[in-house]
Length: 238
Image (cartoon, rainbow, N blue to C red; front, side, top):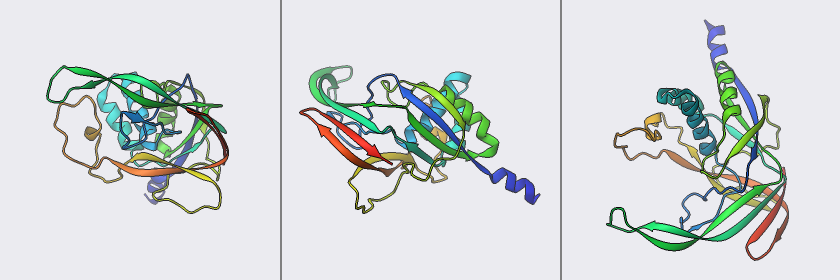
């Protein structure tokens, strides 16, 4: 019995390398949609919910998405970002819904940030060994990480532990002698009261007010930065 319990609790790391098809944008959490600067990297919640969405899309079964959510909800996720990331901020036209007027919009302008990677993004996720093959299969099938413009292709997947210098989510700012760039991100709350129904886009139930997501940060070491009027290129070290 003890051996059986030990096997059930054994964890395994999975790796997936994603190539982004074009420019993409992840609005920094809690920033205005009108001035939507982009995060340089997708947060843990984005990656976890991409696995849930992939499970539903390929199976046609919403309940299967709930199963995957339970598997990955508390999973640790770490990244190896590309060595160079370019960001450009562009002026866009947008339609804004009029207050208290159903179906009516007004034209406004806004700023949207877009990022571009010099090489694939490497993602690592830690899951129970018994779920390893299932999650590995889903990792290789992911075609979109979050926002509609973040189309990706999985170039490589395997069972593999992350290196020590991988970028890990942290809960607070950390002092550093190096030049670092702190990026606000979101992760799924580890509270046991959070369930699939709190993120299920297909449900018609009225969701209770829960703190589904929690704030985290990525700390990136920037060794070189070039910039112009509306663009920046970051060179990273990790």
